[in-house]
Image 1 (tube, protein in one colour):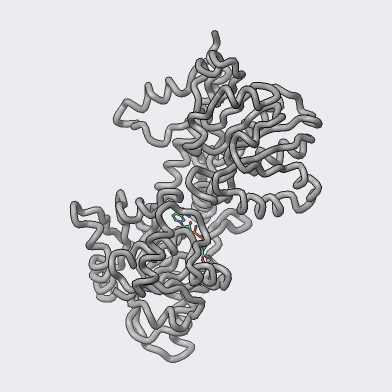
Image 2: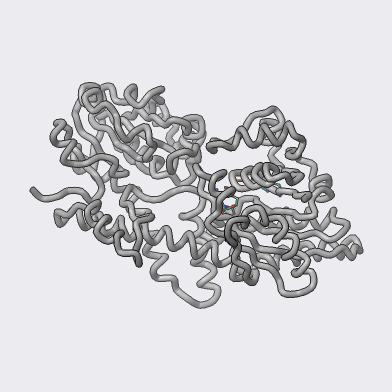
Length: 455
Ligand code: NAD
């Protein structure tokens, strides 16, 4: 099938590459010339396991092209995926300017029937606004071209995006129940047939319910995390091991084991913004989202938990202190630093006078870019960040190690080396990677999240 993907970011690039891998003829559009140049030069602008090979294979097979040419992109695809960003606006609501700009571009150039698929995460009612934007452009040029707007939210996880796209738990598609909607449904069915070979994974629904499903999924996951973090903080006070509790409750099939890990808060481009974006929607309809308000408040506080533990141990004034930080990306297997907990921790440590040595397997270039923005008002603090080339290299002369991202490479370090390299053998583990008893046996002072068992 002839597919256009508008927006070649995490979601757009993975969607385009994976659909090309299945034999479709895919045109990826982005307005960011630099991104398109990187892709056309054989590079890849993001870190995502397995993606580079798929992009290279399909580019050389001629099934995947990258361009900034809007008219050509609209002409190409019978199905036009909108996968542009929906960042938070000032009031937390989803900023739809990129989605609506993409819709207007389609309206300006489309000739025949097009299926417009909104893949970006958007509030309920956005498909109607996309349709209205297209309609306005069609009227302006007296065109009677036809279209149907479909909602097909994306559930992939950064770091496992290719695997998630190729083997989705579910595919949610919202289509209108009218003649154009029926044509669109048939096209979507055809496009997603390869994903439904072993069993049907597609959930068909109306457009508004599909839009809402994406927010509901992310809000549920964020709720589980904040719930466990709140209990972990209490566990720390009352002398309970939250990891034991996690096993104890996760074995109940009504609860399940997934997404019950206490830690130093969730970040990334989706959970924080999607939880926030539901609130203005609810307010528009006169409802307070009490649970989600708390989920967000708990998470904001949780991002400060490592800094608070460090200051409780070393004092509020950290002048002359040096800390090693392992992990900068918001989660493993990605270089994405959007809303990463490491940014909060670094802000706290540097502003309290400390110096830091940081290590991340892939996120250091992106970290340099975002820290320059975070410390734009006090750029002198940037000089207090040393970027280490190895995890062990970050430890030298540090008063403690703080672990922020649960990269696999951090799970079984040579603890003897950790101990000898650190100036003080103290670990603040923001992801509960290690067993407190083992750490004590090794002579390491260990501070996890919700693991301060009274002895
Ligand atoms: P991103 O910021 O990585 O990429 C968006 C891209 O769109 C950018 O490259 C930008 O230059 C481009 N763009 C903006 N306006 C454009 C236009 N008019 N025409 C062409 N290109 C344009 O964003 P992302 O992380 O891929 O997220 C995209 C959407 O998918 C968001 O709504 C997000 O909430 C949702 N989503 C993201 C993830 C994730 O893990 N990143 C997962 C599921 C859903």
